[in-house]
Length: 411
Image 1 (spheres, rainbow, N blue to C red):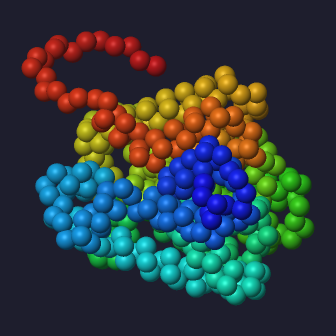
Image 2 (spheres, rainbow, N blue to C red):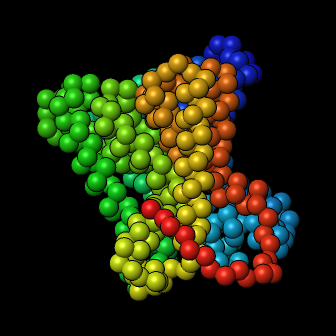
């Protein structure tokens, strides 16, 4: 809210919404990042995006290490839970890997993006835009300094390669990246890495293909381009960005209702655990599908890639999915009850906030003060994770009595 951060007077609500959207790496915006924020203001947003992408616990460990302070056993336990690690021995090495991956990927991404942004905006402005978009893309934030997003670069080859590579790498998770670089292919990879790669390999072609089929003749999106390659390029970018990154190279408000519904489902799935992405996560979605298939095949044990998946993991998937759906539907209910808007636009906004995606059907500017507060809360819960909320509210008790099994009719 300081004068050196903005080019015009903004309200506390504007500042709080923007800060929350940045630190939760969401990308929903009530301000024009390029026009309403000065260079200093854009730097503040970039720093918040970087901290939010690293994660609170990872950042805390880096601060302790820089100050020479011991993390302690409690800190190790919290970090282990935050990064989904079963062993505390590998935690510090994983944190170092995270920092290396962030610096290398964002640096290379910024250098590559200069090929697109410097010719467009001049040397210094183009250089800054390259750095800003590289940080925003790798952390799956979706913030852009251009008023209409990346629409002016809809068919630019550099943008359509570098930006997706950055948010795909950032979205698969640091654990997967570490596994890919430190172990041999296939046999040396963990079950988590294999499931994450399988889910990503299925979801990307599916989302790209469905977007192309549904929007091919829509004059507001793909139909505006006569060239078949141009339509395919836009389908590629918009298909892969939907689950978490939130960049757009076409008008999201002009999407068919069927495409918007597909986007909602993809935003709720999100990216990978221990990544810069939100949603219930790809691994959760895959385990849920495997558990459903196992039930109909009358299997008493769930397994994948020659490894069994314990009951505790399946219950965790059920809890995560249930809490997420409750939060999303509660958010939609509250928003529809307090706003006179199109139901699909509101549902899209809530799903985008929960999945920390940042795509919008031009509804963010229509939010009231109360609506902004609701979206801020959903963005926060979507970033810290529904299970964190569950663990915070629940207490762990050891059962002292075993009850006889009862008969229950389901379905």
